[in-house]
Length: 197
Image (cartoon, rainbow, N blue to C red; front, side):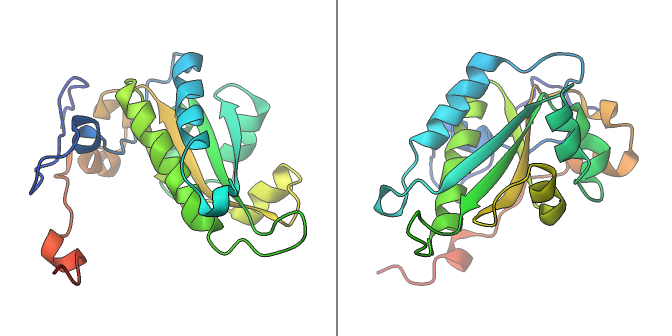
């Protein structure tokens, strides 16, 4: 199945939402022979930096590795399953890390949520600038933490591939190609909104 990189995969929403949100999706096929646009990558990280957090604690940290670097290879080596097949073509891999406690040793109970907000801001800014993002949970977090000598208080939660969208055929795997063009689906609102009065 061919995927035209100019083709819109905009969601069919039940109410109008921002175009950037409706059109954002998570591809697996990235252009593997170009470097990441540093200005766009910086803008996405800046958007993450300005996301909200509990008590403005900002418990997120990021490992940012460009394809072709030793850091990129160390992150890629921890990816599992299909992720290890396609993510190496991304222009960069960004590890989302959350801080488990503050400088006084007090737990940060909302840190994972706050990191999620930061990565959501990252993905929306990246998409608005013409990059595509795919966040993964399929990686060995312990191996990744060891590869970068992270302290116990900094825990990797996600790895995000970011880059320029490529045709699905470049994935070279029929299962992945089929997933790339599969219809986008979400549960209907009346199944996720429990009470609305």
